[in-house]
Image: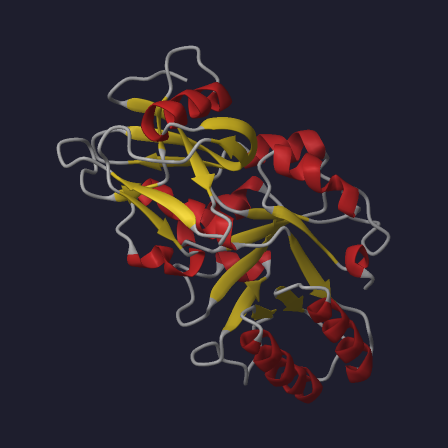
Length: 314
């Protein structure tokens, strides 16, 4: 991880208080991206690991000792004057009270209010990663409206707030009826219903999200407008790069392992997944032949979490 003016490696931490607010620090005016708000951290020393650098920087900047941290996302961003690799960790446990040891202003901000702050471009993918849940249930294969309705409300009661109504076995009219019902229920609960592109279902004003297939993804030259979130199914690094280029909110990468539903599909395997995730700065769910106990392994590789059908009793 070379630290030069052309190539900078940085560690940053997402720190929460008991109210769930996230800590931001304001950069001094005289430094690069001066005046902007950022997730606390700083540049790594030569040969220093990202986790060690995080602990050192948060001690120097905030006066806290990191006791436990989880890797969240790696962001690679090119500014006109330098390239930044940003290793981001969610700080699970720490001691001390955060305060600006370098006289930098601090602010505790609710996750839904982060967009109001002027963040460096490299920090923007972090906002998406920390506001997305660990699980992304896919509703598929129930055959009739009542089957989907029972599964949806069970998942809603369990606390899931981001769900994908794929339901390719439903007639269009029945699908649109459930979109309206489920979309309203999730909006009321502070969540988002993801749907497949279909005539008659529009995002603006409905707090819906759009989930694209990988072929639909490659037919676009810009991010679809007006949707609360936009996701894409990806099966290759090429797909992931396209999603990243368009500013898609998150991807679903599959199949990681062999599945009963698609036995003809060649599984990617954990090594390939790890290699691809190192090359993108995009929150990504893993799907295919996985169990909930795979969440920790997925997150250690830099995945956002797990998506699936059978994984959630589908």
